[in-house]
Length: 309
Image (cartoon, rainbow, N blue to C red):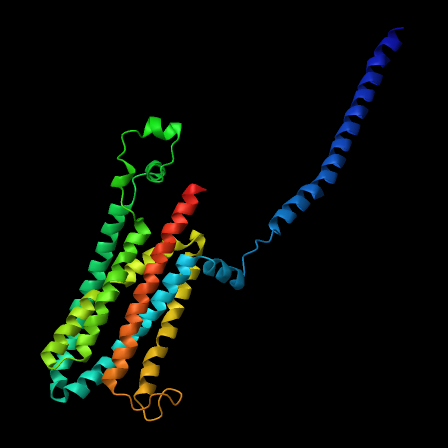
């Protein structure tokens, strides 16, 4: 009996030890089977491919926006006018006032450095001030402007001014007023430059032309970004905008063909430089202003449609 009493615990200990070993072995086997699953999951997440839209999709999205297209077209035509003046104003002045070559060189440098730079800076400042004056303070005031009556609007914003006190143009439209007005004013001033009777008159008209014409660049770009339906396309749209400078450089080539003996594809050969520059630059200014105005109109329609929806 005493011997039996002493052997029983030994058997229990052996059984317990065997059970524990079996359990640990099973746990090791389970962990060894689960490890590849974890590795497989990590591997699958590492091999995830991020798809990006191709160039055709990006261009389609940009060109599906009417305001964007109008601003790009207006900028392209404006580049044509500006590059034509830059390339041909020196030959024009030398043809009209050959004895004033030195004076033109000095005046031209001052006009570009002072009038052109001032116009660019003042145009941006004016566009930002117009946009700040036109921008409603909040989305609720936009709702009030469109006569959208809701309980939340009536309770929280009853102190807002009436819709008649808000301007009729939004911020992007207000910025486009700068290139519209500036480009329109540049057209007759360029005509005065081309057909001036004296060197001083031509230089003065060119100075005023630069003051009103070069204000367009910053406001046009700001409106272009505002017109985009997808803000992620700003870099791509800037690329398209920059590409238009290459198209704009075709205009000076066309003017050179018009004043040559062969003409432009055989048309209008030996055109006087005055006439060639008048009938290319002036219409380009007017067309550019019209396209900017169409862009502004489309921006207003787009905003109203979004708010109504």
